[in-house]
Image 1: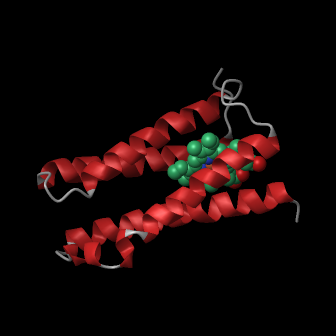
Image 2: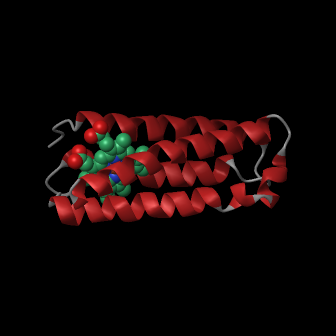
Length: 125
Ligand code: HEM
């Protein structure tokens, strides 16, 4: 396997893991188990997301992708910022429950859109 394919597999694996780890934390909070914040689940998602982003940026360099030429990539980056922001609110204990639920839905919608853009690579401009 060449280095591009290794990076792509790493990117995809960590992309699926980010959703699993985010959903798991939402689920733990939903069933009244906020204690995950005192376990490795506190840092594992951050480590995964760091690898996800490093692999993403490496793909741009190795694959010669340019977000200013590929609209789907630019949209992905914008949605990623929205996913991060909504995800922070969804998991913040000091935020009220209704706002956390709305933030969780927004985060899941945005990450779904990221997957769609990544797979369909539509021509946006
Ligand atoms: C939560 C954030 C992200 C998720 C969930 C995600 C998910 C994915 C997935 C599943 C693929 C493979 C699509 C396929 O071919 O079937 C992919 C491809 C790709 N992603 Fe991401 N991605 C994310 C963030 C990013 C970011 C921030 C960048 C750029 C800075 C990026 C750059 C790319 C590139 C260039 C490809 C194309 C690889 C190829 O088809 O050869 N991704 N992404």
